[in-house]
Structures are given as C-alpha cells and as structure tokens.
Image (cartoon, rainbow, N blue to C red; front, top):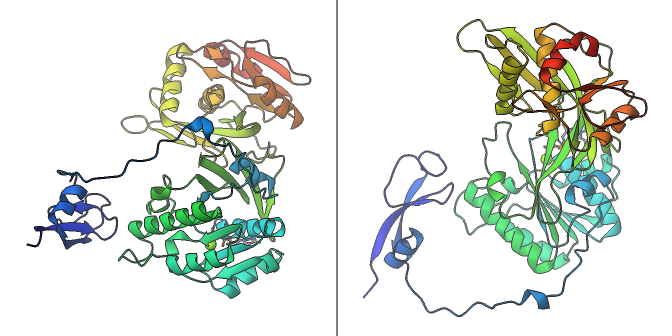
Amino acid sequence: MPGKTQNIYVCSNCDAQFSKWSGRCLECGSWGTLKMETRKQEEVDYRLGGKAQEKKVSQAEIIDLEKIKEDGLARIKTNISELDRVLGGGIVPGSLVLLSGEPGIGKSTIVAQLADAIGASHGDVIYLSGEESAAQIKARLVRLKCNLEKIKFVSETNVEKAIAAVSSLKPGLVIVDSIQAVYSHDVPTEAGGLSQIRAAAVKFLELAKENNIAVILVGHITKDGQIAGPKSLEHIVDTVIYLEAETTNNYRVLRATKNRFGSVNELGIFEMTGSGFKEVVNPGAVFIETGEQKITGSVISCVIEGTRPFLVEIQALVTKTVFGYPQRKSSGFDLNRLQVLASVLTKRAKVNLINQDIILNVVGGLRINDPGLDLAVCLAITSSLLNQVIDRKTIVLGEVGLGGEVRNVSKLEQRLAEAEKLGFVKAIVPDCQARAKKLKLVKIKNLEEMVGRIAHIA
Ligand code: TYD
Ligand code: MG
C-alpha cells in the first residue's frame, strides 16, 4: 500500500514550507512564490517539525580532542598588507570567505589584485565569473598589470560544472564573482534567489573543505540591505569581509564582521587609483579634512580600530525645533548614545537642548562604537549651540558618565601620540595622569567645566 501523502506549500524564493497557501511568503516576504508540492506524510511531519520518525541510526564518532594534532593554520599571505591584516594574517587554505559590498565599490578589482598576488606565489588561481566575459576580465587584469599566466578563467553559471572544472585543476584559490550569478541544478528557482545562493554556497563550502582550496565568494548588497542574499550566507562561511566606501574621496575601507581564524576589529584602508587599489599604510588622517575652514560644531577626535589609531571628525548641527518634538539624528554614531549625551548635557551642564534639534555626523562614513568619542560629541553639540568654533588643531578625547563626569579612555597615550604625529597642538582630555611630549593638555573633570571654559578651550 502506498504511504499517505500530503500537500504542502513551498516558497520558491527561500524554500520555507507552510501547511496552508497564502499570497505572500511569511518568511521572506515575497509575493506569489508559494507553490504546492505533494510529499509523503512522514517527510512532511519531519520537515514541519511534527512527530519525527524514529529511525535506526549508527552512532556518531566521539573524538578525543587531546589526541587531535594541532595544525598551525598555515596561511597564504596575500602580500597585500591591508588585506592580510583584515583576514588575520592571510587566507587560510580550505576556508570560505565572503566579500560583500555595493555594486561598483571595487570588489572585482580587489579580487583581481588578490588573484595576481596569490598566483605569483601559491600556484594557480581560478577566476569564475558568470557576470563578465573572458575579454572583460582580461581587460581588467591587463589594466591592473596582473600576470595572466597563473590566473585561469571559467565562464560558467552552473555550480556543478564549475566545481567539476575546479576539481580537475586543483588550484590554490578559487574566486567566485559573484555568488548571485551562479545556480545549482538541484534547486528549481532562478539564479540570485535565496535558496539558490545558499545551495551554491554550500557546494563551494564542500569544495573548499574536501580539497583544501580557499574559496572567495563575491556578493553584492544594496545600500539599504534590501537584497539579503549575502547576509543569509554569513553562518555558512568562515570569514565575512565588507568593502565600504568612504564618502569624500577615493578611500575604501575593508572590515571583517566574522572571522573564524582571526580578530574582527582590524580595518584595512585602500585608495582607488587609475591602476587599481593602493594600500594606505599610514591611515591616521584619511578620515579628516585637512583645511583651515572654521566651522562651528566640528570637533576632531581619535578612535582605535583594532590596533591602529584613526582620527575622526564629529560634526553637530543644533537648531531650534520648529514644530513638535525635538529631533535627534545621527549617522555613524549610536543614536541612543547621542540621546543619553544630550540629556546629560542638559541636566549636568545646563546646556538647554530641550527645544533643539540635533543632527550628528561622523565625517567620512565611518561607523564608530568607541566611548572615547563621548566628550567630542558633547563639545561638538555645545560648539554648534553656542556658535563657538573649536580649533582644528585640537583633539578631544574622553568618555562621559551619566553624572556629567569625564572619564579616562583606553589607550589614551597611543591616541595622543598619533595626534602629535599628525601635527595637532592641543588635546582636551580627562583629568588623569596622561602625559604628552609636544601637545598642550587641557584636563577636564566634567561637562560643566567643559562648557564653562569653552572659550578658553577653543
Ligand atoms: P569593480 O571592481 O568592477 O566593482 P564591483 O565589482 O564591486 O562592482 O569596479 C568599481 C569601479 O572602480 C569602477 O567604476 C571603475 C573603478 N576602477 C578604478 O577607478 N580603477 C581601476 O583600476 C579599476 C579596475 C576600476
Ligand atoms: Mg564586479
């Protein structure tokens, strides 16, 4: 007798399963993607989390970790120092790396340069592209003055065929540009859909682990993160790196958000030039405008990202609220933190912000989460409100507590040394033991003191 069957509804975009039809998939939100499928009863019970069938299984092996040989994670150095820094010292063979970024940001450029660097020292590199033709890729590689000998090109959108080609050559590195353009014939939907992206990534994961080949997947994201494709891969891959633009000039920031083989706080800074990316080895001042303009509400501070100090510029614009509830807007700085600081300024330093709108911006598009910026934010707000210009050769560092007290920040001396190196002359710092060689230190105990002495500080 044939087993009982049941109809279920499967989303063709994200593979979610439902027992009832609806016009919109409740998982991914796409419309009209639920299709009816007939499945065996036991399979449905199992997939929908119902009474799972107990089956005879063989026992999994229990491994004694003490007896496992440690492998010292041999890394492939890319010789692009900013990239190595972000990857934690180089690419680990057999790892799967996801490189995401907006279209046009330079993902193809950076992987081309990487292919050249690796190909020169670590055997063949396969560049797999479903988006661009061999001629286009060659034109880019030639423009970037890459050595074409070690870089092989595969123009294929079918994952299975591409993987078969890769397995026959056994290269050191495979670059997939982009994961949105490939499809697996195991999944019936078109390329670029969530289930396709995931299926393809899993196939590349198997390829990487079985053959000990490093694989880099390139994934596009849009500005508002609408196309969540690459996001859904983050748990599958070993390392996730983002390439982001810095708004005012040609700098690009590379940051890791997940790394199974290293830390995630290091930033890599590149400059886009006519012949590809150049590393910026001393990036201390790339995020601030060096100029003599005198603007109120603009204050310079210093953050530590990973192990390196970067100077950042905080801009605040404080204007009278015209209608209703005062607005607080922030870009690059935590909005909740801004609200807290505005309340502390109002309560502890008698800076009346109750009927003022505040707009805060970290210049250059960096997103920062460093409490050492608190004092700079408070000073920028006060400077804008009181129309008091703060000198651009002054650096401001300090964390602010709820009592309005200014606290010490981590690695203060390292930050001061960087400012000194870049020609700053004055530093506003917490009242602590800090010393500096050339900088004039102005020590501040609390916000009230900061506001009271603002003319002197400026
Ligand atoms: P690309 O790497 O194709 O971006 P993505 O793959 O992320 O979509 O290139 C992005 C831009 O970089 C492109 O508009 C042209 C520019 N570019 C340069 O300025 N210099 C160069 O040497 C190259 C190769 C590209
Ligand atoms: Mg591209």
